[in-house]
Image 1 (cartoon, rainbow, N blue to C red):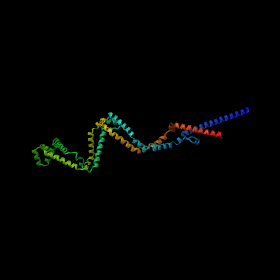
Image 2: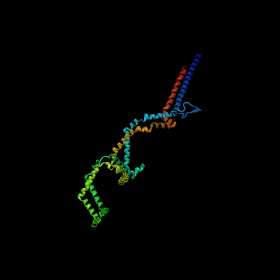
Image 3: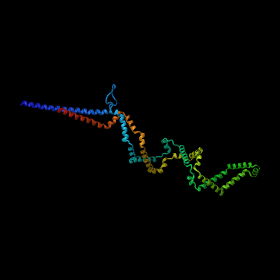
Length: 393
């Protein structure tokens, strides 16, 4: 009886020991498998970035050096450039964004705000010129105006050489204005006729004429002095010009000349305008009569304030619309000239490998940890299967 109990206890103890041994084997293999699986995945992740440079033992290059990303960095940079151009920063996506009404409204609001701030200031064109270092002064403005006027007149004459003046001047001057012109010319003629210089000139002509006629001329001068004859001629012509008949004659002459001018072709004055003297005279007239100094010293706000509402309600929205339209049309050329693909490629290629590693880890650190844990889990599961097979077999 006692022997039977000893045998029984011995058998039971053997079973317990085997179970403990099996449990130890299972735990050992699971722990080893988990450690190896986690370590393998962790090393694999590290090998994406490390080592940064190839390692040599003598002339023999150690396999798997450098890491995957350092080794493929140029290819990665090129692929990222293509990804950005072909799938992210595409022509269609940019043009679609430029058509977004929300974006247009934001830009419009910003421009309107800047416009109101501008109106609240008091700044002259000269001050604005100095601020942006444009170097604009009154002489510069007058020179620009003169150049523009001369160019416009020259282009007009070239374009309309065969056309008569009446196409432009026919309705510009009325009969009343022609009458005023004739009166002006008559008065100027009378003033010229009666000045001292003209009197001396007439007297000299009379003397010269009398001397050329010999005895007869000297006889006339003996009866009337050249001074008296000059005065008589001046009075006679003056009285005629002031008479109704003389006024009609001058008016008729002005009208005839005006009609003749209207039927002349524009090319008539082209040689006159082509002369340097004519252009210089025009420049001098512009320089003397254009109040450029006053313009430059006048606050811009005074000039635009009467039109401020119209500018804000009509001009600025139109400018924004035109801006976005031009930008949208220019997107293909801009991207082509910017060479975005090359830009991204160069930027990525210039990154230190450590910087690339830092960027990727900052984004995917959690996922890499999960991959490590998954490796440990799979390693532990494989160790469990191995332990079971070991125990069963």
